[in-house]
Length: 598
Image (cartoon, rainbow, N blue to C red; front, side):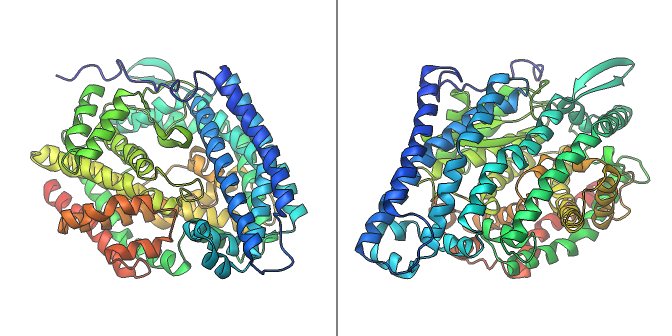
């Protein structure tokens, strides 16, 4: 019998990075990186690091390039660690005033580094990069970063304008994003569950979406929507601020539309995005079939939003944290002992914060503490298999970080499209392991868990893509009202879900922090899922050959674009057929789901 899943859920230990946010070690590192940025500025002046009047590359320029690159990598490594460390405290406690102030201070202090990085990009991008690559081993080790710098330079504003953008960022887009995050993390929801009046943090209310009692799910959904509605005005202000900033800068940098700069950032081309989106749209009828089947299994005429995560079959089982750890260790070992040992290391060294609580951000993430070669995983564990899957997913990210060890900060800059590779792979390992030996009811439950995730990452993510695209188009003219955001998200959901789910969620635009972060922080998730499923199929066909290349692939995600890396496994990601084949894996799951539902 599983123990109480609410007991003894782990909090992460951050002391192996720095003892605390006010410790001498942290202060020394913090002050050191600020001083280091100032020193870097002096060094860049001495080396003439800014847009060049000539593209010529000689021995003197090569020497200067290598010195500047080494210095920038070194300061970025420490800064990366500091930012991730502070961010962990903010994520688990929005009322941590010290963490909030440290984060705000750091954002302000690194403005000069943003400006130096912009100058570095112009310096490299305005040079003859082919001559540089021919003459420098350091350049060849950073070839992909150099080629991206060339593209970015072509879209840069003047040095003065770029510097102004950096100075305005903390009090504009970053401030709006922080406002959204703080409101969401501190939001509490009054509701009555099984006759008991409660006030719960939003993270726990959203977790009730998978409760077996439909009355509880309905009450939680309605209370959640009411709570988001109560904060719609500041949320709309934040979203207008973020999208207005992004849209203005995009136009000033001369990109054709708001999607174009994300292609470079995600290391893909438009042909690849179009191929994937075409396959995605073609799959919608299959997902509508799944939602109708699930409604049938639940004895409903049609699903509502609060039925999407409703449990089927044996999903009433709850796992204790100890059982979750054992499941991960055992089944990761079926792929490789290295993967299992790494997960065990994460458990033993308290890299995971799993307990839902007021002030803690919802969802889950993994962050890389580059300077100490560690990761941290944040999640909100509720004992469901879905959370086992989340744990496997986030540990996959951490395993990816393991394989990036030894790379410089520039070489580790993995695009989001490829950042999901290891996470989806590990999540699929967990799913397949659970599916083996499962009886009919368990199999139904597991398939439903997988298909629910796929529905979110394929169908719902596309609705978010459509929503963000519409917001950008309209935001060029004026601020949008909360009612307009609600209408746009509803229209986008109807375009992807069709009429298979009613009612929908009118405040997803306020729920999802992704809208308040990087531009189009959505389609890369679909890419990651389908690319990961495609790689997993390769693994199943030839395990030994796959294992011989996989870790090196993870180590190289910041060194080449996605299309080039995919070719290592004989995959052409600009061909719709690849994405269709990955979606066929999901279609087979829907077929089996249909058989089990009857």
